[in-house]
Length: 362
Picture (cartoon, one colour):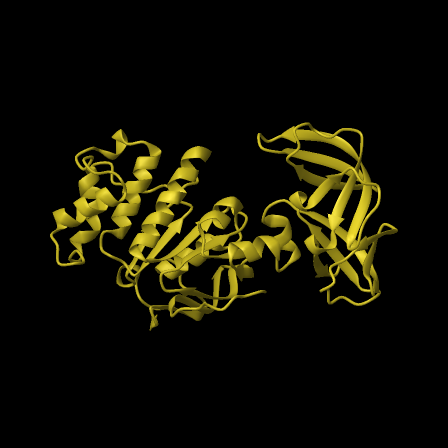
């Protein structure tokens, strides 16, 4: 597990939390510290434990072991309504018999609005914040999916919670609308400075809007880091395979001066900063955009040249996604050339663009 330490006072802490449902362990000894005011995202495949983590912070699940803190206060045994959190669920859960205004005001039935304003003033303020001003008298059924999502967000923010929890709030929307609304959510979060934990299975969404990302797999945390670090320096083979597209090659270190690995009998230059030793099994990780289709026939310095065959290409608008075959391996290359490559090509890999893991695939 690779962690990065928070730089501010923690807004939310999970300390060695384990959650089990019968014989199934949903979270296994999970520790997370989310900075105050941070946008922190849990990302991972379905069933990995990210929503359980969110529900445990909210108080909807009780840990078998471990402690939960919000703003430094232990809340492990507190009921959800006493935790000062706002929750936006995947399906919004708006009350269909209430108007938009009544939905937003619902949370204020149980506490006074923050900032010494009236309930009406607070609702108007939040409707304006989510760009829904003037729609307070509409019914939820008269709203689009994106508008319903904004109202659910406004309702969660109405009591002025210390922590905002978002459980895949955009998953039911089309791709273009998701992209627009994730920017809206991030902008609102930054404007309010509210500590936010966001759950998604969409890696691109996690990388685009987060201060830090936690990659979750099978109830454990694989890596916590900034989006750039998770993408460029994945902390495990799982992270490398799950976050974005990657080429993973199993090999063995043949020399350290200069650093070289053998992959199916072919020598590949490794980064000068590698820490592996000769004879050690390693996994080479290379992003598709780091592999260049070259006109040259020879390598220079820390480069490796491979001869491959193009199997097919996909046009992405701004680039081609090229599937190549090399030495019984499939290699994925992303190129911004004007025409798709065909036939036999030379692939150039700079050693500095290779990320190395100890050990090969099981």
